[in-house]
Length: 244
Length: 174
Image 1: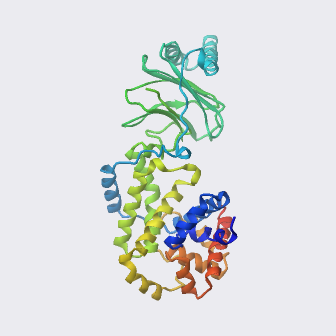
Image 2: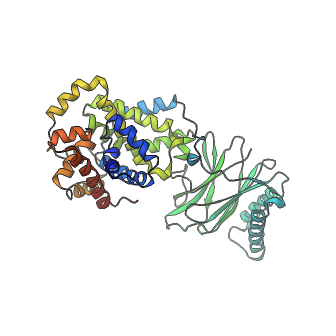
Image 3: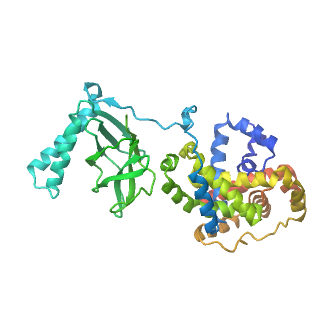
């Protein structure tokens, strides 16, 4: 790395370069990983300086922004750049081909079934109904299964059947939450997010069954205040696209 | 952010609530003119909506993404050709020892402000002046050097080591 050009990271992070210098420096950035990392940190630092001069915005700004947003089309994701693409889970047909995930779900579901058959659970009746739905989805001829790792640890699995019109979700080994937080499951649809339920505390979640609606694009798991929210208030920790 | 990228207006309103204050505050700090500042802040906030799908979490927080864009837009406005006349006057009339905490009508982020003020205090005078003029003033490092009557290379270096010291003081994670 060229030491001379490297000293420009500070000026670059604060937009203090001339246009020509900026273009040259960005050219350099593309091939200097340590500069890119430093610029990232210095931008984050500059952002703190920016946040320190926050003001209360007038209501007129909110009205104008929301009105403009309503008539502004959003850019599609930059699929040409692999780095920017969200890794889509691979959905597999619910057959022997998807053996590992399938066996896992079956084992969990039958484990739950066994537990509910052998003990009087508080939510016994509800659990029975859920189980029936779960088994219905798992036995559907068009069932598909996908598994994804949650960033903070844990694995989430979903099984979808368009014929049954339902999705089954379960997760294992999820990070435990503070007492005042709950995991909540959502169906993400064009009109917004619809709650599929707040999950009882624990590292192992579900299986939970939820209705699929036409146009539902994904199911997501978020961390919400205990008892759940009317709408998601955080970004999903797990997001699984629903195959058409 | 994922919901915003999917066109969820309610999610965007929450994003607006979190970011409109910092975005407008920063733009106003650089541009000074309230009407122009609101115009630029509006542009920036709508741009966040428009480009939400391009946000990459691995490149920094949403707030940094928003404030980076806000700063660049404010600086672009300052440096645009139409403003060139005004700008010469700005450079000529700028006061270096403008107090750092002069914005009066802030409500949120008191703790954040205190922390930034404290960390600003750990910089050398030249570091602090360079950072304040470049970031809050929107000047290029060449203009900063001229204003401070300091060598170019020195200002370039002070901008970097000043920010690095702030980074360490503010505990910005790498």
